[in-house]
Image (cartoon, rainbow, N blue to C red; front, side):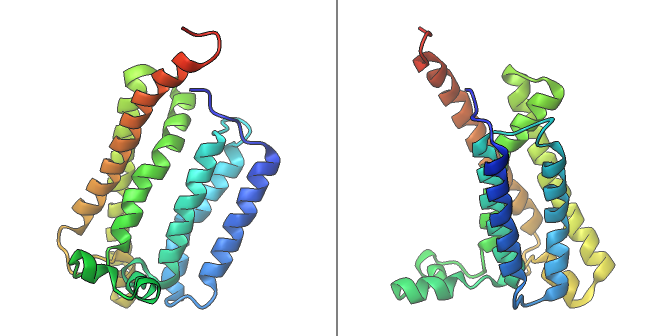
Length: 217
């Protein structure tokens, strides 16, 4: 599969959209201290992408996937992930709360974002690792899967460490377990599930795309 390269103009447009999303997320955010904590890694990611886009460019699709994930993250940062009012949104639109329809008792927005991490960050991660480590074939898929597992687990450790350091309401808001002792395991599992789905899809679709390209049989 030949990814479409992203032009500087395209990346500038995406960057401006991301900045707008971050500013909107900050306006009237429910817990300002938590908002700053949630955006530390966003700032690190933006700096990395800006620093490497010439030497290790990603495809247009990957940059769009990153932007969508960042948008979901900024929604959670605005209210904390445990308090995103999606039930109020569905009640206003459809007259019924989503939790009532699905029989949920907790706020599952954080679960959505962890699943989205696997679905939307796997391709950018694979492209980055393939470029840096010159991977291909099974090794590319395996290393990407392991790296996604490692980063998902590592984020849970960061949350735990931050909760210990800051403590109090800020630590609880950032950790967002909502009383579920298995919360880190479920979050990591959803991220790995999303990653696995993307890699399986990529492995199945790539040979088909190559066979349908002009000049190939």
